[in-house]
Image 1 (tube, helix red, strand yellow):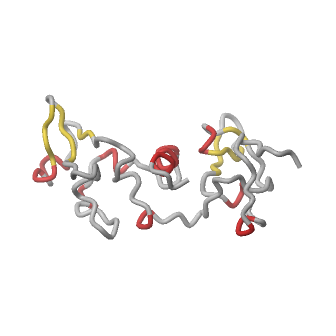
Image 2 (image 1 turned 45 degrees about the horizontal axis):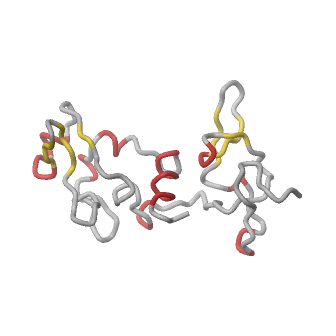
Length: 151
């Protein structure tokens, strides 16, 4: 076995990950071009094999947003809201206008003001479009978790 995982990251040395593989990792996605192949989100979708032993970033497919909050926390400095986004009319108290642009309010610790202590969103049903399109286990999730030191 090589010393480096095909993704470029180190292989996991954790005894907890002994039987884990790229095929059981949340960051593995079936993507093209062409025939869909397993690709790693953390490497900008480089191909990996399902049976390849886990790298140091292996994460269960049961990733729970309520254990994390990275996307609503300090990983991103601002949540832009377009002029047409329904959240502006449905939840105007959560929106501020800065330099001609609409944004979600932030707290002093740079978390979204709508994020509660239990990691639930106060306005989840009316959240901005960018939040609706945020994919659990997707590239932005990887970036957010990594940026705040969860991986």
